[in-house]
Length: 179
Image (cartoon, rainbow, N blue to C red; front, side):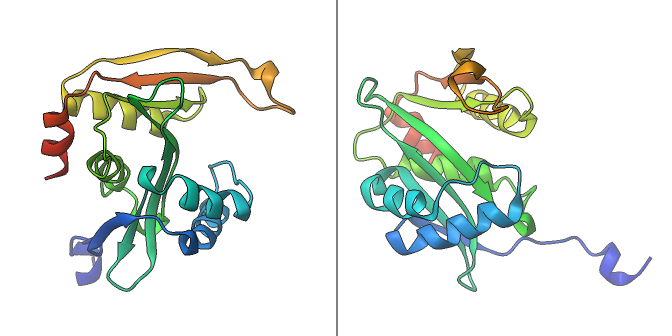
């Protein structure tokens, strides 16, 4: 075995910050390159970074590359919740816990603490299911799973979406998890 193969791989350091409109292009490119996520229009990513900046976070590597992002919003009908729309992690940053750290950074930057994390997941997305269940365990709160959007609501062969609702979180939990 070569010394390179025996040496443990270390992930590049990343810093978390609020998303800016100029991040939208890199998000769109990352989703297109990584596959597995539904690719929205470039316009969507730019607009989300503008209109929902408080609920969008990027992880930036020391060299300036986009390591990952989370896009979310506060649903008007459920303002105590942060709805996680999409989490993208660059292939070179996978298996480093970055997706969970992005969501924790998202919770930490809320001006009004969130009591719930919500997301929808298709039945074949086992990585997202594991992520949200692990977040609930980390916070010591339930992760309720329920039917949410029937497949018939979508065109083509889009699968049904199940709602994952994590909480209730306390302000202490959301601040503590980010430190």
